[in-house]
Length: 304
Image 1 (spheres, rainbow, N blue to C red):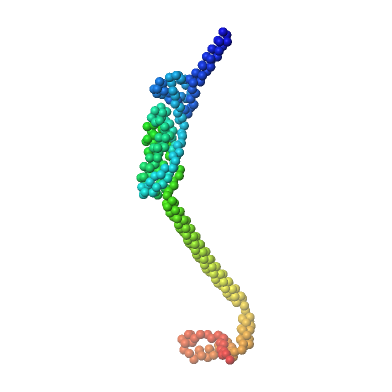
Image 2 (image 1 turned 180 degrees about the vertical axis):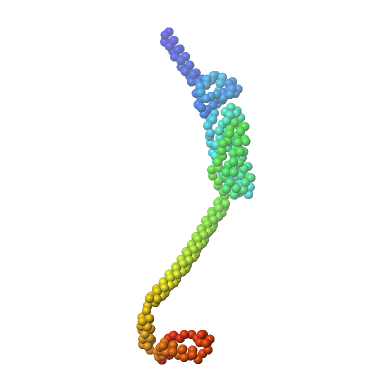
């Protein structure tokens, strides 16, 4: 009898433990539990400690964290009839746990299908050049259109990012040729700009050199002129201090040097010319005599 009681107590304890494990739910901060009691939605529970009736209640777990959904390559045709393959990523977050469970059965499958049709709608309104160059505008258009649909499911689309765009092979080849031509053009422009800068630099250097040369010549001429002027002033200062005898000796020395040259000379002393000048002046009128020039030493010579 005691053994039977122990067995019954053990079965009851195990049953209570299993019932507690099924009835007690610990809901994390980023989770919610949507409770259905006898098939009817009874709202969301959590976070924290939640007790349910395992016989009449059923629950659905909902994650409130931001999640992402990868959309595989989808083929779309642009406005200018170019077929391109695009894959992108959708970032979404559940805002209303109850609506997200009641309004849509499989959110991921529904999101992939609505994203494919939305992509074709957005790309169909854009040219190929716009699709390749205006990726941000395409991301915004996809996000707005997807958010309009997912809003009724209690889900908010936070961002859409296009990951890869695959143009047709012919377009890729044309783009490669265009990039090569653009690089060649930039190289030519850079080379021409460098040659231009070099020519300007050389011309500027030559200009500065010419200016410096002219300035140097001017300063050199000024220095020579100043030297000559100083020499002349010195000569005049020395000449003022020389007595008549020294000047006479210099005069005779000069006559000596003239006489040693190879040409034929006629030397007329200054005294004779002064005498002749006096005789000539006596036969002139006073005005003529006044206008006459005093004769100095006159040298006449002829080459052999």
